[in-house]
Image (cartoon, rainbow, N blue to C red; front, top):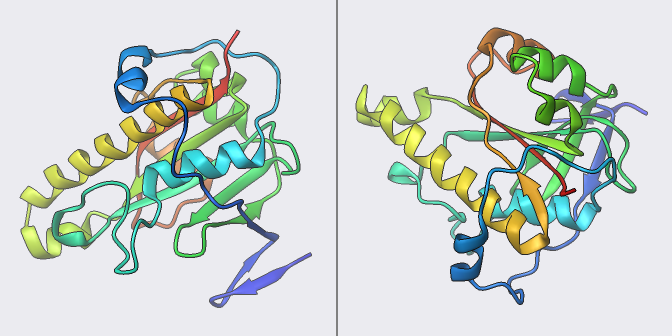
Length: 209
């Protein structure tokens, strides 16, 4: 089924479950338990877990549109993609996270884990994760106001968002690792990113062995 949204064609729109704002895991406990986990069971995540991870990275936290991470000038240059391999009630493919509505927009209906892992220098964690969360950035959103220093602000913001995912994964009992070693152009092709976006992170997530 083809859906038109903002003049673009998409395969599916998936409304995510509402995120939870409390858990039995304290911030301190999550910080202490956070580790880079690269080996995962061949088991799916739930849609609720995916929802929580994406909200942790870039979720809206008040009526003024502020998010879970600080952003220079509240300009928010980051974009989030979800590469789905195994999620209950969610078919594999590439999705874009629409944070204002807390939904996923599907536009590629293929399991791209192997292609993404090849772009990431054949790292097995990217191929074996149940999902991969991919960050990109539109630098011009920041540099238009802050000049070249704005590039530094983009990297700061990406680090904040990635750490949020890591801590949220601990709270959910999931494993994750941040991946920065990849060939940018190949990742752009796999994800089919617009030309103005630049990939920054690949973050695989799965159930720990």
